[in-house]
Image 1: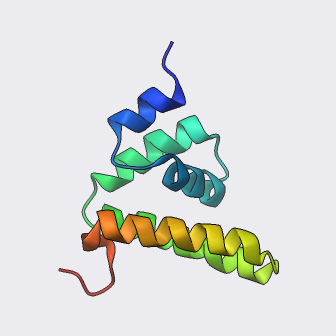
Image 2: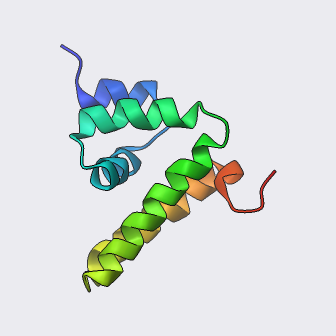
Length: 91
């Protein structure tokens, strides 16, 4: 049986990044891992995943959930470090 750890190992996304995609798309983490991996292989896919994480941060801030916004900011920081092509203006 394939586990989420196996799926994570097959993608360029961390568990936290997969969780952010799951939160954004309202999907179970297994499905979000597949969607995130697919998105990362699209043209400007990393920028799309980056936008999902940013949307999640905004949603957390609008809910006054500063703790979750901080967690997501850390996820975003790690994602940009690992995928610099996702940064705005990167071409």
